[in-house]
Image (cartoon, rainbow, N blue to C red):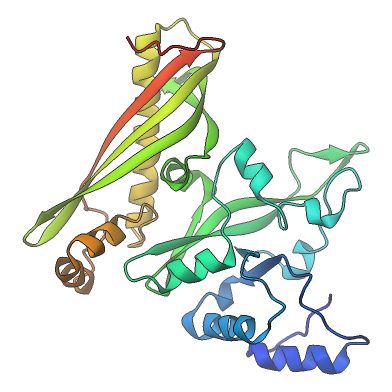
Length: 311
């Protein structure tokens, strides 16, 4: 479907669409919604929400994304092997996330819930056209990929972070997370570990004029490849250290723009709303000096082994 150009109001664009369409416009087929960065502001988003509320055909289960790319180009990208467009990342992202987890896809209903939740930060995946890595019939094949995320807190767009700076959120996002990490020691790769079934908890430590947080993470790990000869106990320690660094990096990159993808502020708000309000007014609910303690435990094993090798 085409789209009207150069309109500053969603309703104006829709009127143009209806009046120029050669056939009846139906919204029942919509499975994904993509918003440009300019729309990720309270006034524009409220128009999007109003449109959705008025149309009985638009389902709340559709996927929602942001993008910094050209919208027309984005919707011309086709999936591999002459599959239906409905097999693309845009319309069915769960399969890709289960296979290898980066930034969790979000449905419209959950986006609205977090967007309106006090103290919550919603991470909206951003779509990008990539011309690297894949080819078909000996030609480069452009594909859609999630290259980062827009962080929105208290209905305000805080900023955008690239995918490599958001990797830490997958360990707190879902028990269905599956991902491999390359474990390093002194800047050199030691091995690759497949991690799955993360379980986490958040503890809020309140102080009179500040708050700190303790995050506990337990995850199952399987050694996939060994690049250096390292004992299992040392590999466990290095894996936990690599995970902590990844999670700390995401936390600090987001805290620099006062965003909170780990939902620590939300836990503070539910525990002590008065303290949260005081810190939020001072812009200290989450900032680059907010203390974060990470306790990571990896239940590590080799391929084919059923029992933990931590002992």
